[in-house]
Length: 429
Image (tube, rainbow, N blue to C red; front, side, top):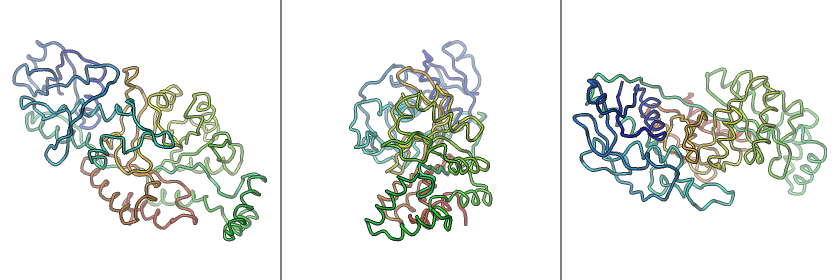
């Protein structure tokens, strides 16, 4: 057990110390503000304050974890061994930077609360982030810092107990269109046929007609193939289905269509299923509740997982809506157009609401790669990026998550390439 002294135990301190020490490193911790108790303790101990109390391991604090709300911060990134760090400290400190304040800054998405330039879709772009601007977006720096911190602690306290963890891989398959041709209704199907013919895309015209008369499977209905991979190789996959009302933003098939429901139910028999939130579900809790109930009615179990279909996180409102409806796992933390670690970590973590200064029950599962990013890079570059980040995550025994769409594996996409990426990530020969 590691005893931690700080003059004032704030919600931010409890949050980030638990994440670094307990969730990543598996070290039991206890807080105290009593100097007598701390000095009398014979085991491993750490003080976090302005100055050391004795011969304990000491980390000098910056004020971020003592504050409330948010304000503009001047951040200077500097090298630390083979990585980078920020919030530098003087030599008297056991670490050259405040690892806890820096980790809190990244995990809480502090910078996304501050004024920033949004992209055309109203999203916080990767280019606005400190990690992108300082060239460490491709590294899970929070986990790297934690493992370096562990080495230093063990050297100082050889008898300190900790629990090791294992490297894991997971894939998310998002589906806002279960089918491309089937069950779209007469008017939508007729308009689609007319557009294909107008564009002289006669291959799609033929495919569409064959799907209508049941001579061919719908190209987007690749779920059986993925389920076969799951069963054969025991892969972890999470499928996200959209069940919103039809609108100018959401063009998915009606949740009442029996074939659509049958696909969701059959997938749920072999893999985890979650909710791909529609446009309005991301804006208002009423629509989110409606979509949640629809999915629960299909799979006959509580909805535990959700993901933002537009990749435009609105912090903290969107996460608070999920927590209010007891959807306790979100998978939206990443940049759809840029590979990397948006929150600086490859470890699932609890979301901290800076507005309310509380740790919420919502667990954030960051993803590292989204197939949308493949359109911005060459195939060779994509594979190089994935291989490099896989190694980074393996080094800290974290969780590598990638996101694909069901249409990535259809005949209308470069499906051989995407299947090869899937096999690379899951290390399938």
